[in-house]
Image: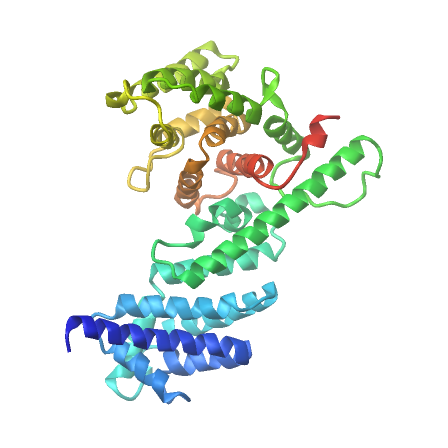
Length: 422
């Protein structure tokens, strides 16, 4: 057998396993499938379908099969999870799967009798529980569990980590890895869409409720839940900033449209950088002249040094996108390998979370292609501080909250312009 034919054979064995579970989710209950899962993978004993047992055995007999095994386990888990339509069924399926794995973690090899393959399966399962794929599964469990329970009991002393359910725009980078299976990605995207839609509906209802209270159209005792972690005053101020007029007589969106109209005129890259500086630097107009000058100088020098070898080229979409990408690197955080973010902390400390978010919104409104980069950088900060108490990182929580409002009001389906027209 050649290497190519070996690979093709293994691929066929994988597909047999996936197709088997795809058939089961249509014909059997969660409990029945979990029991099959336990017999096939955890117990590794006589399975009802010999062809599938053979497929699994051929895969674990490979010399270096851990990575392949992790991918198969992960995909089979998500096949089961994705086919549960109700949130409670998803939660139930995840809980039962995790219980299976947790039980295996605490089993010693001496508790397994039989052929060496049985012990090898135990080792593979234990290694899987230490993989990135398993960590993503655990994060998904946390998201489902936390979002369905009340966490108002002294939340400030709880770790930031428990808020990962609260920010749908971070799901892709908090709950997925580069090697996530198609089923895993589908599950997270579906959850992300559902959470974002619910957030926008709840936000619209709550803001309407606040306005009606102010107009004395409803009694203050009437119940409505604030979907954010901001106070009522902070929430209303945030919405007015991201929906109302902040740049002279223009909204952020209007100001961005006017700037984009200017960039359609053919111009060398260095002139664009000058005008881009003017567009962004108004966010630094604070009471302290020293701070204003400090931030403006930093931004100006950074832009001047950005791809200076292209200064005489005419502006194009690629140059604009690369410029915005590099600006996010300066303003938020560079990368996981270079996680320093002192400049971002200084921005939030001196401008406040709303104005800092507004500065980042300006960039997104002229170049939406860098939105994934912004989400990824905030996810890096979230992971960096996930074990800190919320009390210690309130500055980050406030920015995350304001960014969610800014994204929802400028790129979502929510329309809160009525609040401004009052």
